[in-house]
Image (cartoon, rainbow, N blue to C red; front, side, top):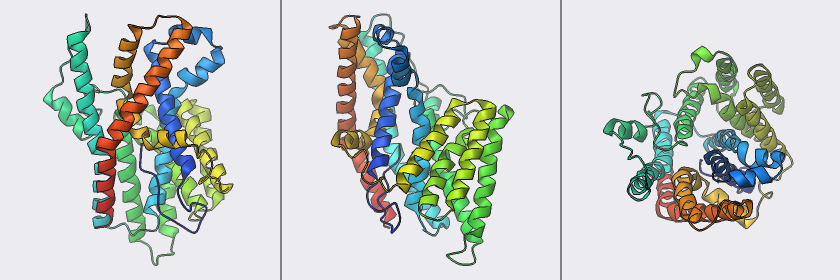
Length: 360
């Protein structure tokens, strides 16, 4: 869902973090498989394979989202590094993240609406879907949930949360730095983020505070990733990260929210791999790195692309488990091809532009 970290440091995070890239790709494909199962296109196949396998592959695929949130926290904390966060920096940071996310996001809205229009014309019994100007405006600025507007694409809610995470984290870091007495003084940062951590622990326990569109109920996922990064870079003692992870686990023990548990497991996995010095080497297979490269494009496009691909494939293949397995592979291939094209045409230029702004 965010760009890989490229900054070289003399810590455990030197070089390209291939493990994170691959994990992002795996998470994106897991979400794709979840929507396959949710859509019912593979019902016969799911009934045939062992129940535990169907649960892991299809039913649990929504856990790709907490993986995204943890990875986003890790990468943003790593990319900001020791930068001085003033108002000008905050503005450039917001602009970079906006360019990185917005252009592909807006383009995917056009693609989604195009598929909807084609379906209304070509598929018998389809109900035309009208999208108001207000709905488009709300989506453009990630405000559709706050404004109680229907999602054009079911995956867009996570982007609304990601934007809030980025801005909150950068703003808090800027506030902390305002009170630093020197560049090595970490006390203000500790105070500010202890407060942020307490908010992230308390908020999920009170459903009355869960306003639609507000990311705070899932803030702990992003912070787990950021704190894992800071621990590996020795900005934060590892025991602080461990304590926070235990406390978030305690929140899960009360709420039984599986999303929270997935965040803890994901952060501990990334931290353990980092401590073992394998973030730059594990999961380096070319196909996994490809998935990581196009993961954002896969995530944005897979709902309309999969729907259209399954419709076309179903006209050739039957409903048997073997044919559905073949259909699944074909639709995955179509998603990867569409994502590669979208990455080349839209995502790659927007990422390049965002990097140029960083150097200004």
